[in-house]
Image 1 (cartoon, rainbow, N blue to C red):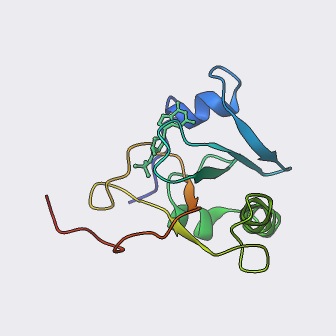
Image 2: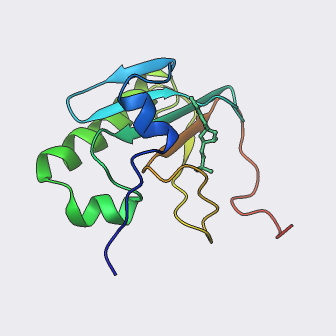
Image 3: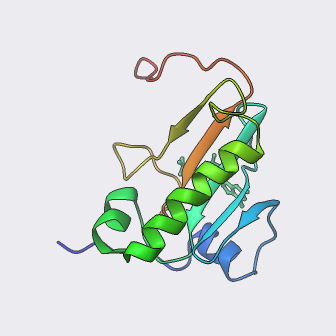
Length: 126
Ligand code: DGP
């Protein structure tokens, strides 16, 4: 089964400029902006500009240039936000995928969470 991308998702609309965002960083292939519902003092979402639904989709189908740019954008955001290990106390990076991953927005994004000590990685099922 092929990966299916829905271009009506909210992050696709942000990329098209149809919905505003609080941009932290923009590169050739990536956009980083603040989460609308922050769960930590630093909570930034980093998305590729290409139409990828999840990290595995991106890793399989993106070009080398996209992968390098996206990966470096994540590192740059960590540094800019003062949470990278050469600039701060660390962070948690999460990328949810699909139903079992409880992904709400079906456009690849990593959450960069920092500025406080995170709790357990996986909460008991609710
Ligand atoms: P996930 O469950 O991993 O798909 O997380 C989606 C995140 O997207 C969630 O933390 C809230 C955030 N979010 C949803 N809609 C918007 C929006 O319109 N703008 C921004 N900046 N964040 C949004």
